[in-house]
Length: 170
Ligand code: AR6
Image (cartoon, rainbow, N blue to C red):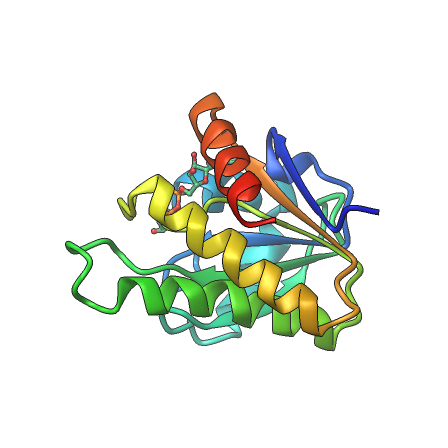
C-alpha cells in the first residue's frame, strides 16, 4: 500500500485517526483551516484548548476531535513567512516532524495534514510542499506508524504542487 496519499478536499470531513490543525500560538481558534476545525469539532474543543496554555511555533499538541469524524486533532503552529531568513524552513519542518512524533506515540494509523503556513501565514506554497513531503517521507522510512499520511489540498493549485513535488521525491 502507498503510505502517502494526496487528495483535494476539506480536512474536517476526513474519517482518519488524526487531522492536523494549522493553529496559532494561542490555540484558541482563528480563521482558515483552524476556524473550520473548531466549527466542525464544536465548542468542547475550545474549552479543552484553553487548558493547554498555548503552543510555541514549530511545536505540536494533541486534543480529542470531539464532533469531528477524526478521533484526534494535532494542533501545530507554523511560522509566519518573513522572507525566509528567519528560520521559517526549520520551524515548518518541526511542525511536520513533531506532529508525526505525536501520532507515532499515540499509535495513530492514519493522519491528514493541511498545507501548514501557506494561507494567512504566507509561506510560498511550492517551498512549503517540499518541506511537507520530504519531512514525512523521511519519518516514514524510520517508523511503522502512522501507516497512512494524507496531504489534503484545498485548491487545485495546491493539488498540482503536491503531485509535482511527490513525483520528484518518491
Ligand atoms: N481543509 C483543508 N485545508 C484547508 C481548509 C480545510 N477546511 N481551510 C483552509 N485550508 P491557513 P496558516 C487550507 O490560513 O497559513 C488561522 O487564523 C488553506 O487553503 O488556515 O498556517 C490560525 O488561527 C491553506 O492551504 O493557515 C492562524 O492564526 C492551508 O489550509 C493562521 O490562520 C493553511 O491556511 C495560520 O495560518
